[in-house]
Length: 270
Image (cartoon, rainbow, N blue to C red; front, side, top):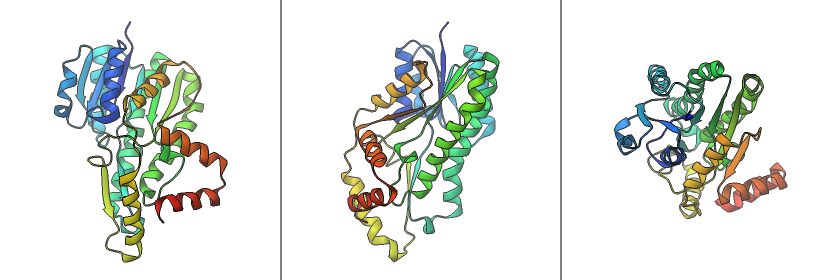
């Protein structure tokens, strides 16, 4: 019997690449997106169900999970991929910006997970893969809200192992570094410095550095890491992927907090 994976944020980037890889591997795929029209090309693939799911809308989550089980009978793997980033000085962030960042990256992920866990409990089997980031284990300037959400996802996932492993459900974290996707354009919210001059110089230097950051081009590396996490059958929790991710994590482990902050400040011009 074919296994089934449900993927959020499947209309572009890592999500779309992951849909294609699981499909190539012979899985049933539930490809979800806020607007299914953006993923119509995936509908042409056999064994792929494209359906609407907005992680901030509980009704749409419930309906997508129901559609998945009605179509395929089970959900073997959940990939919580939907998310976005924010960039700016925390003091300049409005309540709306702050809450929306957490609504999507943390609370939305929790709601989707809560909707799928009962299916996996009944099966006494399943794997939940949360797409975090190297930014869930180390930080960059002017990204406090984004890092706060990804650190939350890391802690949530690590802790969930204790309550879900005994029920046959594995937990996994995939931690990409920087890739050439639309993350820094469509999926990044720049709220900036709010015209607070004390931050502007540092912010400009940092964003200038980001424009020169060597991004990895092969987004299928991330899809492959997700697939490996789904199928390796191990208790391994974290799957960093991307040259900058592995190098930064290596350096972070070798340095204390003061040394790492000094190194990061030098590299980012702050």
